[in-house]
Image 1: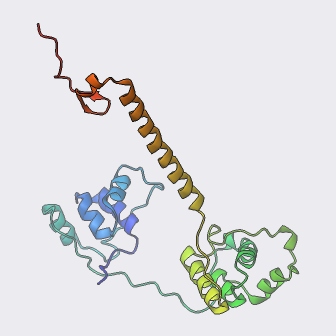
Image 2: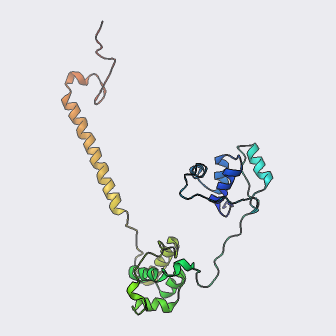
Image 3: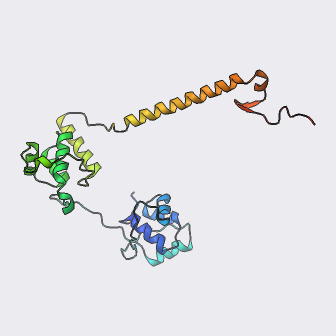
Length: 236
């Protein structure tokens, strides 16, 4: 069972931090956040300064509920009214005016990197027409000289989840293997090599320390390289 949470958890947490004496644990649990996120909001170290959202005005909390929490640190706040889920309506995706000029770049990126994705899927992802997509496919678009393929997720035209789902669906329909993300493979391999190198270096240093120490000294070592400070103390 999914626990109901406020519609804007970070903004709600910011309001509760500023306007109540609830504990960070209570705020984090109510908003579905990690306690460190609430700590960052309280310390103003969050990546973006948040504008608080009043959960009382939003109908998600009551004054009495907040009072209960303030009087009992172990009390778990109960949401008064769960926000109505946002449902995507049918029709083209709305794109802010400021991002509409980026659509051709996003379309070109999908065509270049995932040619198996259909025009209909691209249209639903980016909110564009088949005519525009076809013009970019056959390079007859009026502004083709200025179109540069750019990741539509980075451009803010769609989400990574929606893009991955469309690519996987298109790959399945085309009978090809779904692409795997290998962007971090080289970093992972480099880290493994580095860790192995450090392990080997420490082993060599330990062996060298043991070789330099005489057999007499070894008897007084607690662990390789560290001698017992209470052994062989000169008598007065």
